[in-house]
Image (cartoon, rainbow, N blue to C red; front, side, top):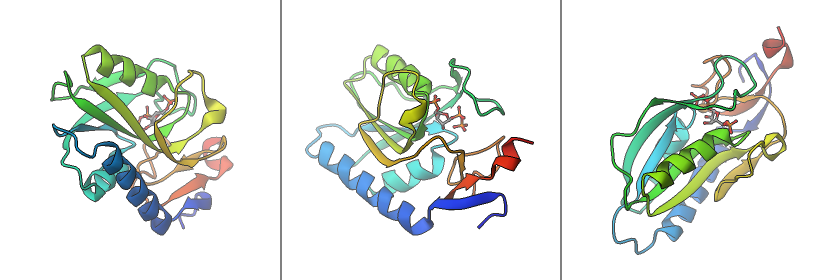
Length: 181
Ligand code: PRP
């Protein structure tokens, strides 16, 4: 375990199981779809979870990426997520699957929902690895959430603190002394 972590909350094995379950849930939801859904990764945090889920799915999906940023280096959201890089594909009349690493305040998800439905998507389905309902500021939730977590600072498997720890293959709670320095 990384020395800056207090404890691990999701090991590599646990992540693999969550990925399989999320992919199976999505396969069930899109069984018989007449056109391939567009799966979108909200970068950067969801990158590893996204890649694992879409590869575990049996449904034929297309993929696209969007970079959205809300935090900077702080642990508090500004409430105004910025679109740093937009999608390449059109979502008009498509079934859209949004894959997130975490729903925290809900600002990012609400922004994405409004944007994607505003562009004429046929449907909008959200899968998140983590849900932090205690921190919610906007009344919104994912359609499928793998793991509910309290108000703890988690990093790894895409999740960062000041752009660090993203590449850890597991998820752990960051020691308070790291972010309270
Ligand atoms: C994180 C995370 C979600 C969002 C959730 O992204 O990946 O997209 O915050 O927080 P919210 O529910 O309070 O909006 P961040 O903006 O930190 O960018 P990152 O994905 O590059 O880490």
